Image 1 (tube, helix red, strand yellow):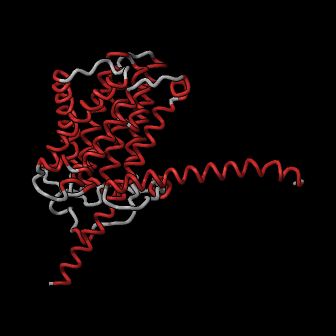
Image 2 (tube, helix red, strand yellow; image 1 turned 180 degrees about the vertical axis):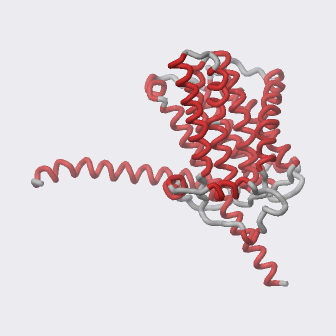
Length: 351
């Protein structure tokens, strides 16, 4: 390579290096700020490839079965044996592949054979595909393994429906408009996130759950149920194009917003059972709750400008912000495990 070629590439390399540093600095600032909301004053390192590394490895049926039989008296581990190592969920990817394959086959049946009988199946599987897969991921992440599949399904179905009913009640009380203006978007965000929050609050109290990962799972279950039923309703009203759009967008909407709120409820209550109303006045809860409302409002608001609308930068940016918050809360959950285990060891030592 000639000297001229080296010199011609160096400015681009320098720009790339500067851009990378700016990105890393911005990410560190964001995770540090969010982590302060959880009670820790330091940035959180996000390792996507490490977290999802198990997806690409071979896993047997016994491993999958072991993940699904947790939450009973005989299968809930003692606190001392709970893992505080970085979480590495993988089963959710198999669930997504199963649902995705089913959806693809139903789409093929509809497009090639023009069978209208495939439409109800497409609507059901397409609405379920992403939210339910994410729910399985949060089920895996719950390292305490103290919530069963039956409980999770109960919250997903009953909690999802109850949150929709609560939403309709709040819509009848609070004027919301059409979501086009910023004020209307915030009204919608407040109504829907508050409706889901109240149902999450109920189930966390009902199951007497005390850990951040528990709250995150219950929140994800309510949010996933809400997302599935809402998408099915919109698809029935506006057609299959809506299903395809909302399917990929579900990656960063109700499931993770509600997971965030559920984790924040437990953060605020600090293992007090049952939850008292003062927990909802705690800043640990209020900050993440308001963040969920903000993300929801920004999602619904049609921001003026062709750039955002053309490349969907608005949605992509909000998905990234939402997941950064989730990764910070996962870090807080693992920190909680280490803290509780340390307290147990200290108590045993003193005895």
